[in-house]
Image (cartoon, rainbow, N blue to C red; front, top):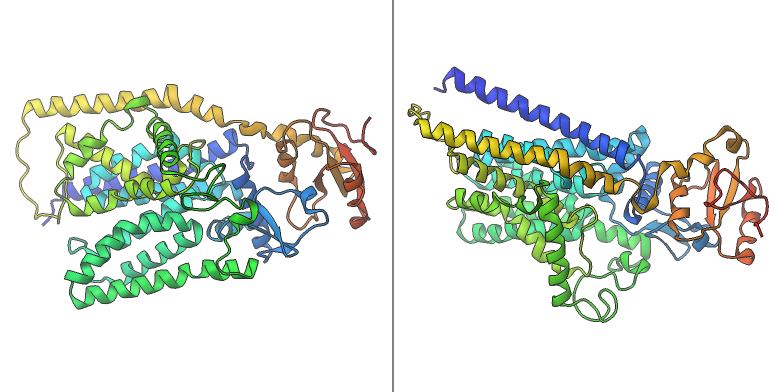
Length: 519
């Protein structure tokens, strides 16, 4: 029988993990509100918002507006008279719920909190309560985690689906799991999670599923019939859900194999050689350059410890070297790194975000490394019957205290000296700031509505892109914006909106609205 004090201790650890999850939600929201000002900053986010707004009102596509290039929305394509986003539907559908409820900027912070909780649960399942708690705490303090949780990108949803799939797989196919004797539910959870990940980030789903696919092949060869039946069931469900991606492509383009990415950039393809990426095409050398740079950024952004962020990873690998479950789970990270070498561009602005769905791999291994260095027991197999606790020698207390002081110092350095300036770097990213839309929120500006505003940019298109925060796909907002393409093109647009007044706007003269182009 488990001793009462142990039960109480585990209860406290679970409560702390829950509090860390709540803290992650609050931290993510603060980043969204204070750093990103609840606005889309990069093209991907703007496209996701457009798709979410359309889906929230029941549309996957809309008729193209007149002069589509004047109504530019990045990564939203016009094809055969229809306008639709190039991105798969998984994340826009989830974000659409936030749009409907008026909590768009809370969706990713909420997912971030779930991601922290699932990290704790994975650690608890693989290595014990304390490892899970340390991993959850490391996640909350990670600049990499905070930047993406505060964004409008799809990665926090991908992290949740990846972790949920991993937990489901462990419960369905490892005898050490407490749910192994009731495998139906975890099998369904794993199948639906991986299928939904395929509808959110298809290439990521391939990378996440690859190690488990190899494990599944081994189980098909060596496992019993019930195990094989569950694997077949899982595979059928995953393929069935993932096939909806091709149904969507067919509905948008008329061709189930036509990737909408290529309708924006015809070279935006996975693979190597001519036609993949810029210039001479993607190559193994360029893949290595991209990957090396992404990892260079990543080991700084992971925990904000500079070049020491990966310090505990080798120790973590040493700690779990005999546990095949931990090797399987943590192999998601190298799988993502290797698979994404086939994509022509790297990721570094928000950290190496193409690897974000494996964040729990790095935090779990780091937590295991910390515990190993501190001399704490790491559970890497089935739970053993309760044994008397041996007396701890005095030197062990000193060792544990020293490691705790070291980790506390590293986390403090991150929170004081790395994370604040790293996040501040993201404020006003690409010069997108809420102050740029304030001229349209004044009482005098609102009196001009409904209005069609022709934006004359002086430098980059983002001067116009910032303003589409005030517009929706249906062009029924008080202001709608077009980017000027010259007097002749601009003059063809107002007749399509006879109920709207026409104004000309120059971002270098905020708060001024011209009735005609200025000289």
